[in-house]
Structures are given as C-alpha cells and as structure tokens.
Image 1 (cartoon, rainbow, N blue to C red):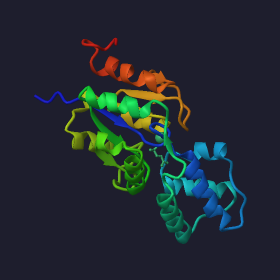
Image 2 (cartoon, rainbow, N blue to C red):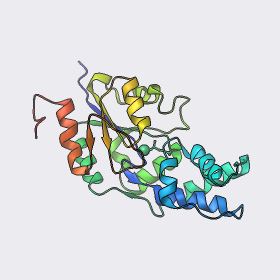
Image 3 (cartoon, rainbow, N blue to C red):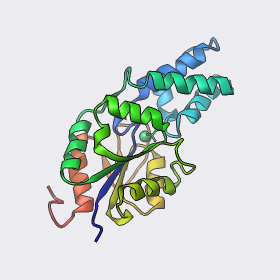
Length: 221
Ligand SMILES: O=C(O)COP(=O)(O)O
Ligand SMILES: [Mg+2]
C-alpha cells in the first residue's frame, strides 16, 4: 500500500555551503573576546554537530569556553546572517527539483537549528521541495541518533526500506546505518569518511538515488 519513496538530506555541507556564514558568526563571537579569527578551513571540521557544538569547538581552539550569553548572542547573530554568504552547491537546486518531479518525497534531517535551516532554505528557494524539516534543536534525538531520521521518515509517510539518506558527515552515515537505511556520501562537504556509495558531483545524485530506490526501472539511467 505504501510505496512512497523518500530521500532525506543533510543540509550544511550537502545542499548548501554554509561555512562562510558559520565561520563569520563564530569569528564575530570570538572578536567580542578580543580573539583573532579562525580560518574557514579550520572551522570546517568543527561543523556537523549543531551550532552550539561549533561555538564550543571554536572557543576551545582559542582556549576559551562560551558562556550562556555568548551562546545566545551567537545563535541570534548567525540566524540574522544565515544567508549573507551561503549558497547552494552547484547543481543542487536542479537535482532536488528533479527528484521532486520524479515523485520522491524529500525531507531534511539537519543538526542545524531549525529556524536557521528554514530561513536559509526559503531564501534559496528550496523550502517548497521539503515536506518535512527537523532541526537539531527540535528533537532530543539529533544525529547520529537514528531516531532523528526516523522522525523525518514518519513525517514524510515513507517506510525506511524505501528511503535513502544523503549527507557529508560521518554523523549522517551513522544515522542511516542505525536505521538500516542506505546512504549516499557527498565528498564536497565538511566531513571526511569512506562509504560504499560516494559521489563528488551533484550531477551524480539523481542516478545514485535511482540505482538504490528503483533498481528495476530506470535505475541505470
Ligand atoms: O549545523 C551543523 O553543525 C551541521 O548541520 P548539518 O547536520 O545540516 O550538516
Ligand atoms: Mg552536513
């Protein structure tokens, strides 16, 4: 009865290159402590476990610890500037639109705060494609807990055996594995991992999804 097929995406490092705004917000926060900026390349491996963890890791790199005020200020500042420099990766809007037009239900499973995630998706014209968006602050079960992904699939009304997860971080792979959902690892993001299915170009996304979810019909396209 239920043959809904779902593709669940990670956001940062998978659909959007948010590192410039994340690093800028982190560095504005550090500057309030008269501390020098951290280079984007050094911020990249700190991304993946949500905004609060990014702030902690950034502060730790300068032998500091963020207080509650720092945290509140950082979250508000980042949300206000979430689209200043952030762009979708090349080919992503087209790939997402194409999956939607093929009838896939699309969901977002991100550790980013949900308000920031929705704001950036809508500014980039992507929100309309996603039936369900669950941010890392909207559930007690954020990635790598597979219940974060399970909640997205529930919302989409798609069974896990008709789903695939797409992400850029070991957290995404662990989340998918925990629910026995196949994963596509994208190599253009911020995390580093080895995985059975890896793609390095957004043009490879639709064929990779189809090979997994419709192997008999059109999967080789
Ligand atoms: O905000 C983060 O740290 C990561 O967000 P993501 O789960 O969309 O990659
Ligand atoms: Mg990510």
